[in-house]
Image (cartoon, rainbow, N blue to C red; front, side):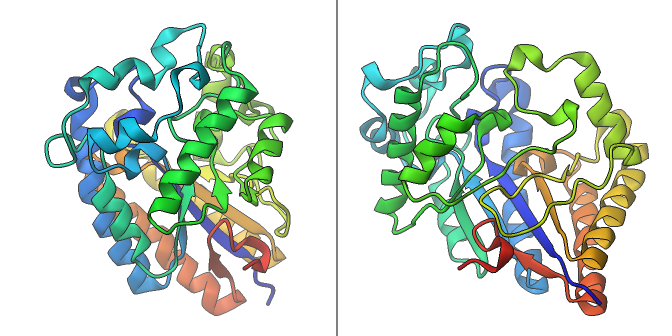
Length: 318
């Protein structure tokens, strides 16, 4: 008997996370479906004693356009990306009055629901879905972005202790900024070359293909980590069961289960992540896949003493 830990993290971003390449018309069904999936996930987590970290875009905390505009950093401290489409500030004119009128951008009621569910951690995914490694981003604008996210969370009585960097982009200076603000944990990347942090222009077809093959074969290893440091690195992305790859989804889940078992046997950590909107289409199939993973965790808990922890709780931290 050994133990190990299972960490689940979700990038909760609504349309803010994809607006540079998607709209309400092209991706809205996924966003709304993801909203519907969140209560189902929480019910399953509560029933099985699963802890999870919900890395939430600061703008999602807001209940209205007025609250959002009041919370944003001043214009001189907003990123000026070389590719303007990356900036979510470019889309402020299209957002609605409040969550009831615009569920694609506002998620205050869901944040409250998550925060009230036992064992769930609200973490940050930055204020504006900030892209740290894109040309035109600066440390000063990143710091202002994080400060805005921290303040919105504090307004709701939430202390941010963990961060997931959008598109998994970060470098040492960004880690220094979040440490100064009391954020103790971050989700790092797998060490293999296809997963290393990089700007979007470097996310080439070979990188993407290797990640896809690894997800269905485990050819690059189990991607486990040793708990107890500020870095709680990703092990696998839970890919959605939809489209052309749906036929291979069971194989993908088997790769995840195998790595989880290895973590439990060796006392290591396994970190699985996804977005709620990944469940937005073919929701029932995706929820069944998640239930399969949770059931496997229960077996590992009973056999090896594996623990379900949040990012903030990784390594036994309080």
